[in-house]
Length: 140
Image: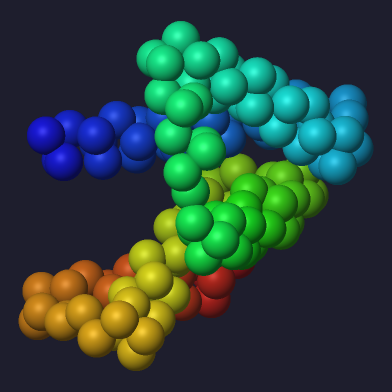
């Protein structure tokens, strides 16, 4: 089940830049980002209400709010806004490949901060991703 969810996420995240690049032809990235964020918020809030899980909001700890706020600022604001500017100004293929480097940061930080193990296959995969990005950048 985890693989199916992850694959669905990869598929959606792989298709989305095609729509984003097209939309950014005529609009400032900040405007497009704000509109996309509002649309996403409405959809997620509708889902929250529709699945009757909004009651959980009253039982969340202060540490949850701190960590989810940090995650939102880094991923949903700063990361996505930088992505939109890169998408507008750059080649969609290069931007998508550079953005695929995020697991390298996550693997390194999860090892350092959460003491999560790194297998040989994970390390080799991270090295191959990095090498591919270096090759792409070198030939650009």
